[in-house]
Length: 339
Image (cartoon, rainbow, N blue to C red; front, side, top):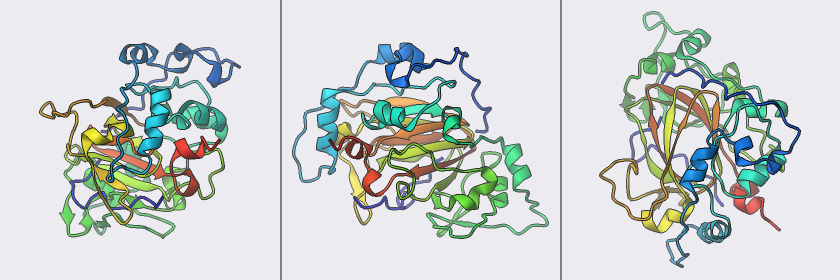
């Protein structure tokens, strides 16, 4: 599989509120029981919702020349073990291991929402920020300091990235300003983790075969309520890490491919836009979709298996980083089910 092409802005307005980090879930005494042996009530904050929403409907596989290369694998997997028709939300007090994450979610192609706190025993120390905190970390005076514009879809190699102008430009949920390839705040900017050291950005330690070579470079996304991302799917497993504000994701599984008749672009045809811009719009009329909606708040991670369709609406000013997998880890359902 080729890597995902960094061209999400080419044909669409860009993606991406200041919100308090969600309160901790009702504290439950720690358990020595492995997560793989827990009940839904022990695992998930929304266990009752999961029971009510049930499982997705999996269409029969139809061989077509325009199929995504992994569609047959997903159809076979989901037909034998359908994923939930809504997104599971892990209890905040639980501590994930790589093996448990692989067995419960990545191996099954199951999207899941969890907390930075669920990864603390794996050495993960990322935190969320308010906009005021961001302005303290990256100060900017519009009278004294030089305004900076950021290149869309850029790959940044420097060890430090000045985000002061970007934070000033989006802090009150301002509209993204475009000037050719330049933007008033970064959009899909690929950076070294070291360039974001002031934000403490780390790669999520959740790949069974280790982090080296398993991830692409992190991407940095600023956003406002006027810059949604159209309904699309990516080539690779995706970890969305929310730093500031709230994003609303509307999802559909890869097996909804035929109903969405995607148009794929890029060198490797890895970025696929569905035939609807926003599946949550009441005027959208596509039969047979397995639509699910989830809000991602500061200090939370959303795992999206490769090929999962997603529309993103920012609930005000937002800042997130995400990482896609690469190489043999591009598709978790393949790399985790080699036997």
